[in-house]
Amino acid sequence: TIVALGASLGLAVIAEGVETDGQHQFLLAMGCETYQGYLFARPVPIDEFESLLLGPLPRKAA
Image 1 (spheres, rainbow, N blue to C red):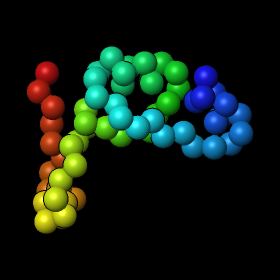
Image 2: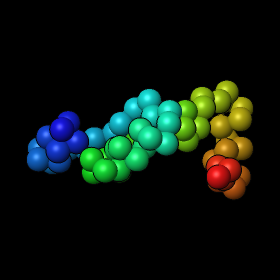
Image 3: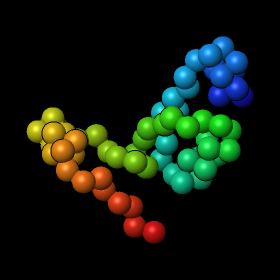
Image 4: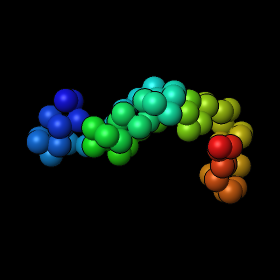
């Protein structure tokens, strides 16, 4: 996999565009521990960004 190739070359692999829990679970199973996408957070305007950094982490509903 690309994840295994990156690891064998000593590179960090970041998965982009993760939108579903299924994709997230697949990446974990493949050994990818760094990812980003709408599953975790949507893009926000810069004026909201500081509030996100300084405030509590959002919790996903089960």
